[in-house]
Amino acid sequence: MTEDDICDVFGLPNGGHDLELLVTGLASSSSSDGESLKSLWRERYNIISGKDPIPLSAVKTKLLSNGLTDEEFKQTFVLFAMSSFLAPASGAVVDLRLLSAVEDVSRIDQLNWCKYVLEELVIGVREAVRGAKYVRGCIVLLAIVYFHRYIKRGTKLSNELPLIQHWNGQKFGDRLKREEAAGGLGHSDRSEVVFPISRKHSNKSGEASSLPNNSVDNVRHIVDLPADIRTDEEVHSSSIDDVHELLLLNKRDSELFCKRYMDRMNPIKLKMHARSEQSSLKDSSQVSPSAASQETGTVDGVGTE
Image 1 (cartoon, helix red, strand yellow):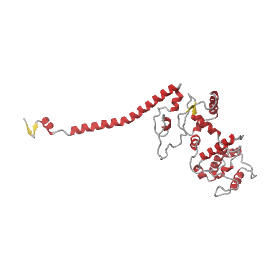
Image 2: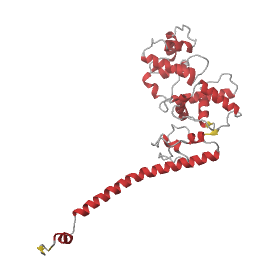
Image 3: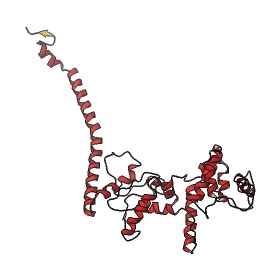
Image 4: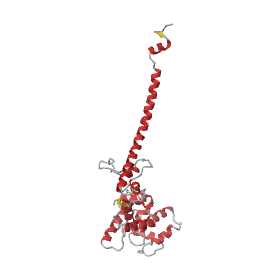
């Protein structure tokens, strides 16, 4: 899994500056000391103690109160989204390390949030392997990535980005039930779509690399393909078995070839027709002298009558 996968799922800023997390006793912002910044945020929630955390429930109430300025709302929303869902660290409290990342609102979209979310998830998985009871990081991310890479035959699943828009609690539950009925995770068919979709395909020289076979899915978001050409996933979903799927893929590819052939031939036919008309007009305007003499009954300008 890479930062591009995070971008596929959530559409977060990918690239830019790394987050500088706030560390107790150290200043990660040029405008304020780390402890002062924490104290400032605690005061907003009437927290007197310098060690008590900020509950996410209080942050949610603040977001819904309509009492925040635009800048405060952006800061608070990012803190809530990260601490509660995208990169939860511990319990239902705000991750105060992120305060320095949201202090300058104008730089929030310039930070590499995809990298941060991935790193937090990796840390959480490693801690879980060691036996940690609480797993930090966005576990939902792992499920969505799996669900789109492995699909059930007869299931149609859109890959329009961001991928999270296609899921809710009910759909999650239904998919998990189908996985359990099939014998557990890993028994679905591998998707033909090349993930991550948001990654730019390039080789070491920086030039665009060739795409793999059955690349309708891979290039649909890059070039303008006909809307009636089915993707690999759509073909897979409508097939009844492997042989039927191969036949449908071959039929689809043939239709695509024919469409592209006709798209190229039609302009050629128009140009050939125009050239033929121009040639006919030119021939009619350049009649030979002998032909003209025969038609008028004269020879070298002297009448024959």
